[in-house]
Length: 488
Image 1 (tube, helix red, strand yellow):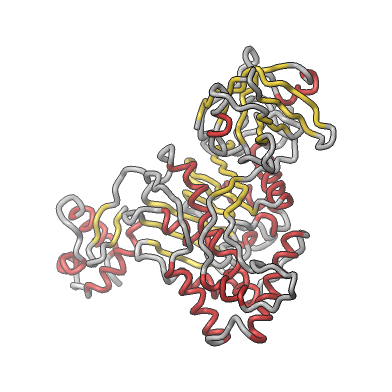
Image 2 (image 1 turned 30 degrees about the vertical axis):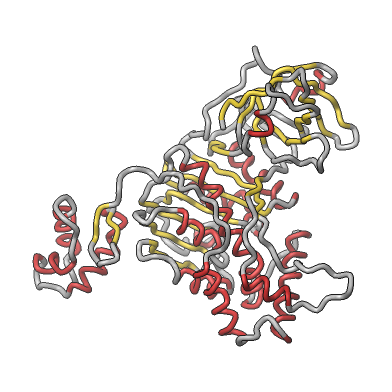
């Protein structure tokens, strides 16, 4: 048994002198252990020591500065990951996996997955379903996580040493995206919780990650891992808090997502982040918002919103004493990815009728609802509305046909179909859907179009109207309206 304390002490001494060479440390340890044993010990202690392993096998300190925004803008699923997916398919079915019976089986399973998501059916992940899931969902889920993490890095809230819990890790989209999002000098202790046959696919894809992305796979349910199963001990120790807990496209599949997410909050470090995202369709996006609101609103003790967690982004509550109760269907949109070869192969081999369009098995749209919660009370931007300057969206009924000022979070891209630009907005008080409708763009209201998703804008002199057909309030932005970007 190697003397771990001696290894740590020597590493802490040498870190300020020169790169740490396992062969050199071995000479200072009683019994002169083999350098390979020292190297493995250093790998196991690297997270606590804030050391990363270089390509040459030496260890150096991790930079103390937070992760900078990397300019995340993937154009395609990286070739290494695409090759790994095809490798799994060839192993399972042979080189012509996309043709014949195997191709038909995979296409049918993808169709079933899409139907189950649409109608909120329980999804069973056997090996074929896991492969179908990887074909159809991996690229977009890979891209999504980086766009969400941008909200944290813009404020310097991601450390270069991260302990991450990925609840319902699936086939690895969020894990691979996180790996590529972080700089090469980061070190990650990554824990995946996944009870299904997707673990075989996940295991293979995680082989493509680097040496400083240390992975542990827990084949357990989220409930078991977090100690929620009655009469059962947690499936794994969670005494060491996590810097990030990820729920990537999984909340809709949990029997009690609020209870599981609440337990995950307890597993967070005080300055950690719960990062959840879901497909952009109405059911899953609104379900995500329900979970978010349950965790932020607390137990409803009559004293206003609780603070089990604070809404960091994107649906900021601009009135601190208010709680939203609208459906909350809100999602972001990022540029499409290139079609990966495995999707193209499966789609091109599909038998089609004369009127059938290609593309049934191509999924490169990056559209997602997301939520970031933090127990420390931090918000992406620290802005609050003032009753002296703004009307609450909760009181829009009394302002119909009036012109008002609003402080609003932009919660969609343009939803119109080429007519007047239409944007969903919220201020954290709304009980009904609100939209800004730009009927005439001017230099004084152009910020509305140019503002990104999640930005805060001040709307001066907007005309409040009730849209009976949609059951929503439309606030008209015209040549009498000024829109200023308050926080990008």
